[in-house]
Length: 221
Image (cartoon, rainbow, N blue to C red):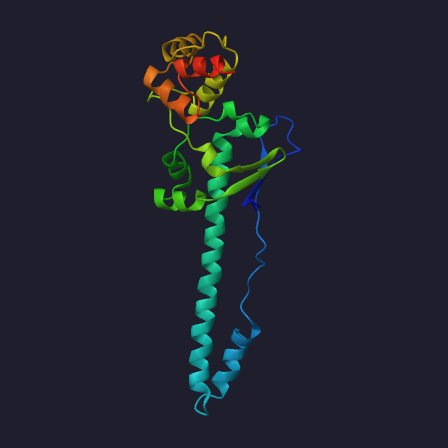
């Protein structure tokens, strides 16, 4: 499936700290202006001829110009909202945009962006739904950056835990796969406090069987 990114995020080459990024809105919509047919000069010309059939034409021009200006304003406000949302995401997820390491994605929910941009949750939801961002390393869906904390006090994202969980399973003794209890203990020892049921949920999200299932798969190879 071909994906056309909605945003582009690139490092600001003029910034020596590596903490600044250039965020642009990718679109092929040209700058919109009101046609000269409906401009003020045309209205003034018709005003001079009012009473000779110019009244209806004058009302037509005014209504169409107002509709056009409202549409242009709507597009401008939409673009401003999209840019504000993407810039807020970049501020929170700066470690990812510096390295493109998914394990560095921080916990972030729609409410965080709504508070940063002073916009309603419904607006943030629409602004991020089905949208993609292009970086020097690839194209990513915006939904990838939204993930809740495993528990309320955690500053570690589910992405970081899932990455470490995958690493533990990849490196386990295939003859003696790690149980969910063992995986939980290993994650806790690495400073990733998490409950066993959450480990089981993330393992299932990865499409990985439990230890008994992995041992069975090894036996049949």
